[in-house]
Length: 182
Image (cartoon, rainbow, N blue to C red; front, side, top):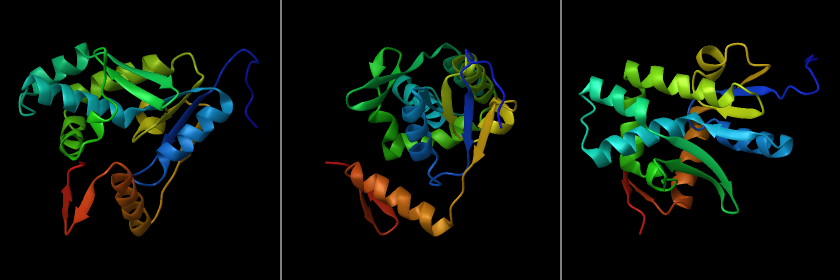
């Protein structure tokens, strides 16, 4: 049983591999508790989008670190669901494009970017009342979170979930390629 002050809202960390259901579970838990849902993967996607739009090469690690330090990322709940606001622009759909998805993993591997995103994530969750999901949330970002969950699924299930997500977003799988949304 978790002992906590009645005024202290929990920090809930949900970790696991891509396609395991982290987002689905985190959104439902946040909604049920009235907490803020934070998708840390969206933050790396936001940095990838900003780099892409500003022509910053991923090979320029200093410029990428600076970009990740100065970017403003906010999560806003709207009637259409959670929106990701990047430097004042609603980038929710743009950060989910296959091109930005492809760039987000290399962006997250840049030590300066990772360090800056962890600082932002810790700041966002410092007061509790958050459900934060993504890789390394329970081990690096919030190792002392009151609640830590690690979700996993079989490779087949993870692939099925990812294909369904892309299909809902208007993309078609053709062989091993993804055709853009129309």
